[in-house]
Length: 457
Image (cartoon, rainbow, N blue to C red):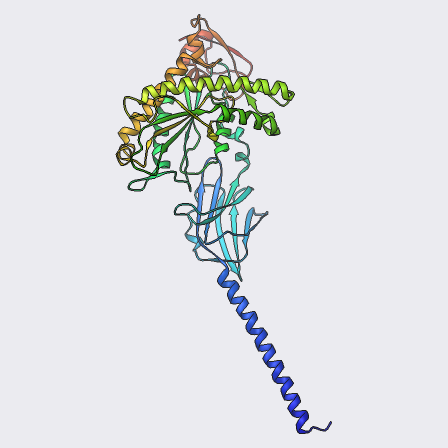
């Protein structure tokens, strides 16, 4: 082929255009890549919290994250893939607690972050996103449930109805990533109310005929419905939710006691009738009434009766709590108030929400921060509830037996799996020696189905 000046010029121009096109396209792609990297979310912290209910992994991020979770076996592992993210934390320094996580490994694969959790047993994961709040940024939360943690009924001790203790569920509000209200000097509501709840639980556990069920047993978060579910699965006779109030001005002061409002009770009745999972639940506290075999009309009547009785008990019990708090703390209102708080909506369990004071008020915050005032507040709430339940004991309890017309008569107890002679004696507030003496036993050997006589003292 012959080359002339014009053909050479044309070919040079075509080559130059191709070079410019390729350079321009490459530059655009590079800019897109740089922009994509710059736009990737930043993971700047990883936290692991263990609790009796679950193990929680929290990823603090600069913006909401997409993610994918899948499990691997032999050995058991859980993989969390997060696309469009940059990891800026040393995972080897993250405390793993005493839950199922034995190791945590991470890798940055381009713009994707991969977390691998080495486990000592299979888990059921549940993940969700949390929006920024207070000093927390966006968060990706992954909850891990072991086999033992998957059913609340398996986690909460079930007591026999024979001469049982009165179960008082005590819920310390907030917890974990939810600090609640924050008072002067960074006094966290979650810390104050947990200390009051713990002291109150000790008082109930020391009182004959009572047993405390702490809903939150450490510094971790539980959803509102989770709290009432734990109480109901534990066959609680009453539910006490402990809080510390806050307001936009520092002048607000005083303790308050709330019960469910009639409007809130009505809406809860409708929810229970509508949700199938509630139909299989029990109503009547420690009773054995289910709704799954009832038509809507009968179920509605049973719920109305249960809620009416529960509300009446809550109001009377709340009045006694207010009377006990009055001498040690100013009251915001002198009567039990009513509101539609979610934690008060168990239709079969008398429930109170107790605001122990205004943490936003400097004077009350200083008192709430002291161990002495926390104990006084715990004692006041305990006294009000103890007084009400002693005079209105739930059926089938040791308190009801002691209050009966003929408490000196011996009752019978049928031994079930897991019983021990010393445990039966302790539950019924008598000595093991006395129990063996009444039943003619020479040793500690007992058998399932055997019936023991329980003396009054």
